[in-house]
Image (cartoon, rainbow, N blue to C red; front, side, top):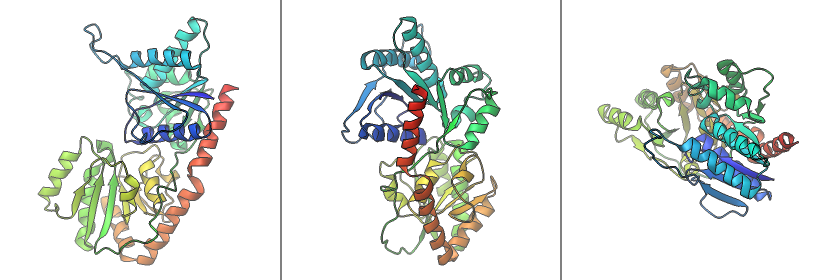
Length: 371
């Protein structure tokens, strides 16, 4: 197949999943064309059958706001025409599915073959952006005009119908996110540290509640000395760093910023904390589980589909920081419990979220949509 993939070149889950899908499909012999504003950050070496097409847009007086969506549609027309694409696989409804639909209409109007369109929804495009009344009509329209729609969780599938008022006649396929269990794997042996290590990885957006991670750590640290490592960057980082110094915890807390080798950091952790307001799936949690790190997270969104409460971690009510800290203290105080949960965490990733079976499902879904 000849496949065009569009995503944001971010450190977030959508960009990771999109690039991993493309890389694996290319290894299987499919021709994969990434149509993006920037090179996805996981492209750190040459892979046969992978091609990149940069979307460039200009600032014109008549286009007061960004012309990215229009430039993307034009680039999609160009790539589809010259590379004879069979389908577009876009990540996020707007603007990517909107641009892809426009590209298809342009090709059809010119009596040219138009690629089929598959849209993968990742969460905020539905729960935040898509449910905004000013954007809801075009979000719903773009999804309805897709020949295929996928979500990574049953939660997001249900939310898409509920929040957008999408008719039941529009089918949505659930294909869970996945992890490279070879790269994200526990260390065979690890030096015993003096302090236990708590981890958090996110884009530091308000809904990730990174400040709650710090508060939970502070409560745990009062009972059992430990350390906290933040991975990632974003708008809330400066405020959380300021809190660290105000609480006198600078010696116990580290901010690593964005990391290309997240797995190397996760392998050194003891517990991963995710107090998010919502998660459509929770890829950061899955990556921790694959490294054998139990997760303590909010009982929201798609997280219960990834974390078995009491088995590979704990799910606590949203905002209940005492319950989160108690769960961590319980694991830190009971080495046998922590060891069992660590084994269960790795087992969860291996049995339910490996890369190959999920790419098999995407590949089969492509063929189904193409007929």
